[in-house]
Image 1: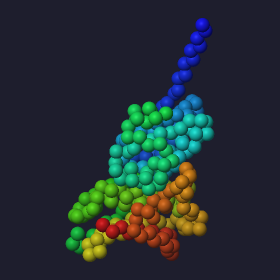
Image 2: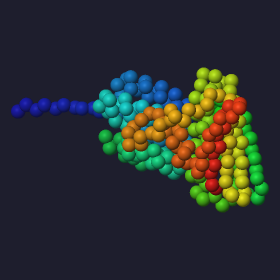
Image 3: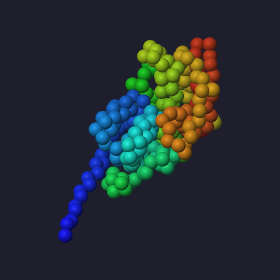
Image 4: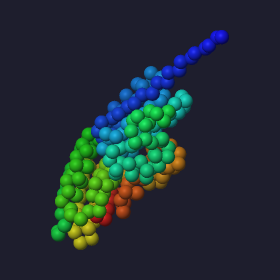
Length: 112
Length: 141
């Protein structure tokens, strides 16, 4: 009996910014994410649990990442910010419908 | 709040110091008693004012932004329990006709800034002045 065993390793990268994501530092996050995309990563967990403030420039980085990841067959899962006010902004802008949201990074990883 | 309090900031038009604006709003609202959901209210005002400032840096001043200034006046009105935030700049005028509301059902990169301002504040006024632009954001406290 021949048995074929194939192992498939799916690479998922967790990115956890610590601190504000705003017009001043969004480019730093974008640059790091671009590096990962250029390495071929297309499945991301973006852990926002330690992000106390997210502005529209930061939101643009998230959407750009989502588009590029999905274009190459991947996806982006978000971990909710701890800050309730920041969560409300993600609901207001319907980011919680565009992205799959999780309470923890582990839950986000397991949802792939 | 018992009397009208006014605080003024004069900032260089760069993203670098926009965190100062949020900190100032947070400290001002710390002194206001009886706020409903103070953390959320503070965050919402911080984000709205931040978005207008970022818009001034990116669009009113654009490439000239490091040389520009943003004047911000915070006014707490005790009788009406409102906060007014007046922002002045000397950059290019805001072109309201080019602004498009974001389609929230489609993932899109741009357009959330002014949408957030309108959603988070009770009133948003924009006008051109002889020396530039004036935004007035108002929030019931």
